[in-house]
Image 1: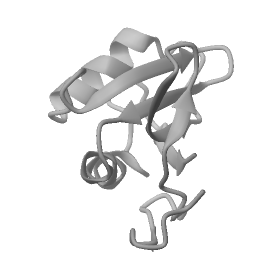
Image 2: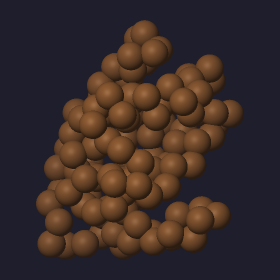
Image 3: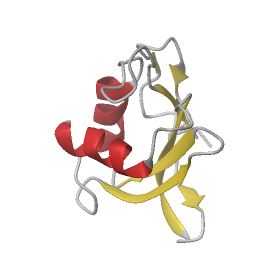
Image 4: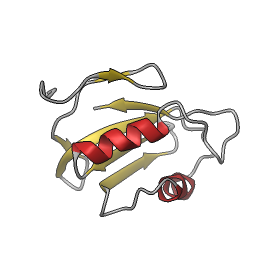
Length: 111
């Protein structure tokens, strides 16, 4: 459920970001703020995605609690520690070209 006190905006990829709220995330059972990154190429592996995150300054356990990567579905769900970090991630990645997959852009949507 969306939090009416958090801002709504249109991301670089043209998506409306307004559904910020605690959501249980997968097997880990964590309750955190989550986004889904989609349109990942089939050959884009989890290590490449983590490298993109690290190079942009996002560090596991400090900035995000959980990452569920689905290479077959071409998506990844990321659970962040707070709304500020999640907004920073969206601003940094939504619509940005992937370094390891030329011509492909990250598409980020809030869950």
